[in-house]
Image (cartoon, rainbow, N blue to C red; front, top):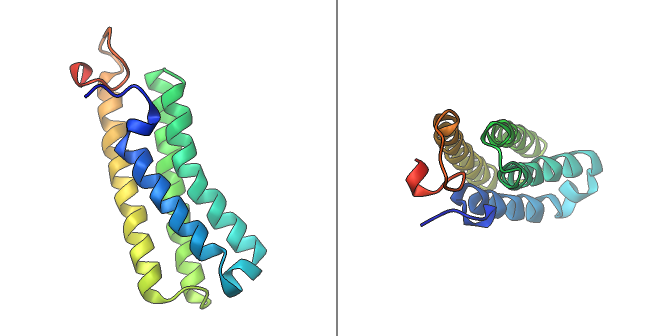
Length: 135
């Protein structure tokens, strides 16, 4: 399968799910009342999928690699904010653990994608950024 759109990337698909689930939690109860933390975690989660999409559509492997690095770092920011949310009682431990696990999974997938794209940087190819022919 040739990857032609960012929507085809598993990393983006998983990041989209993570973003939705973080938003749902951040918009509930006392978490929603804490405007600073709620806004920050939502921004960090949104940054993951947004950077994957933007980097892919730039059409340049070097830039895509850079945007994937930012996406991975945003996963770490999401995890940090989840710890804080759990520590102050905005979300329960089970919810925090489940979301942290999802954020770690997204980070691993993004790292794998970043590694694959980085390997392609010096290889001339006529195919798209992530077509099977270029991996």
